[in-house]
Image 1 (cartoon, rainbow, N blue to C red):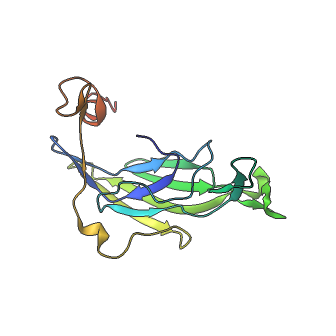
Image 2 (image 1 turned 90 degrees about the horizontal axis):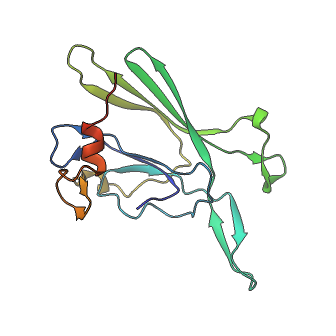
Length: 176
């Protein structure tokens, strides 16, 4: 399914393919984000944003739900190097209950990473330049398990012959 969160994962093998991917969940752009860890991480989860921006009302009985910060990514590409910054809103001068700070105040960069392509081999390397201490992390040792992205067919999780899903999209995307 899809989730409106910010989460960063380690390199992951795509089942049935001879390449790996660097999964990123960056669905925190425009919807209220429930403050909770991602549901399935397969041991490759590096960090996620679990900060509370505001408590919003759910009904007439006074119940509320914590929601997280909205955000976006900024890409800087310089030849074979790409830097990705993950930026969220910043609370206004009167605190989060008064809303976000003005656009001119900028946001809060919670992570920055670089990807480098070796032009001779095509190999891609990745390195986190910054990873904010405000981001939640899984318990130590949880990152050691394998995580696989499964190719999806029209009938569910199976081979990529049906022409849909992660594997099909990766195999049929031109980068020219």
